[in-house]
Every structure is written in structure tokens, then in C-alpha cells.
Image (cartoon, rainbow, N blue to C red):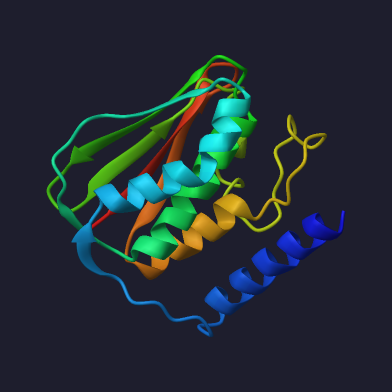
Length: 173
């Protein structure tokens, strides 16, 4: 319980400092491949424990406007949720799609899905979906991910169908 409380306090402090501009981090055009690798390595043990396959669509590295440390943390939050809310023996995929201004990095799971009526709430502080309140969590992971991406001039969206999984779209310049 002490570890959980410490983790929660750290996330609360991080969110508060980001909101108030007390934490400043520098984004720059840097390769995205290393950032994705760091995010994946942070959740590998959780995925393995549930026999969830993690895969990344093969791509040649290219530069996006982001901070490797902070963006990998944001991706880790999304991947942790994908693993937490997906059944054993499922699959979490990462794909990239270059667009004119942004690149869409999509994290897709085969989990429980999110009802469309909750789409506007899942990125707010402390929000916990109606179907997941009994599971462990603080409601800060997606909120922090959104704050980090906003500081990098990026954004995040979701598409999902209840019972069919979710796709989180991270857009970076």
C-alpha cells in the first residue's frame, strides 16, 4: 500500500507541476524508434505475465518533435492500460502513419473497450470508467499522457467499441 501511495503522490506532483509550468522539458526533432522501444521495455514484464504479445509495425526511424523521456512515459501509461484491460493471450499493436503535419502513432489493444459516452472524460484528471472502477488505478495515466503531448504541440485521441478493444492515437509533429 505504501508503494501505491508513493506512486500516486509522484503522479499527482508531476501533473500539478506540468499544469502550472513548474516542470519544463525540451522537445526537439529526434528519432521516434528509441522512444517507442523505451515505452515497450517498461511494460514488457506486465505483458509477459498475461501472455500478451506486443508488436510494432516495422518502420524506418524518422524524427518527430518530442522529448524521448517524457513521450516514452506517456506511451507507457497508454500501454499499461492496454495490458491491464486486455485479456490474457491477446495482442497489443503499435502502428505509425505519416500525415502532412503530424504522424499518428496508434496503440491498439483487444481489451474491454471504452463506451463512446466516456470518450470526453477519459483524459480528465482522476476519471475512472464505469466498467473499471473495481480495478486498480488512479485515473491519472491518460491525463498525464495528454499533458505531456500538449507540451510537445501534440495531442491524443481514442477510438473504441465496448467489448472490441481500443485504439489510442498519439499525434506528434
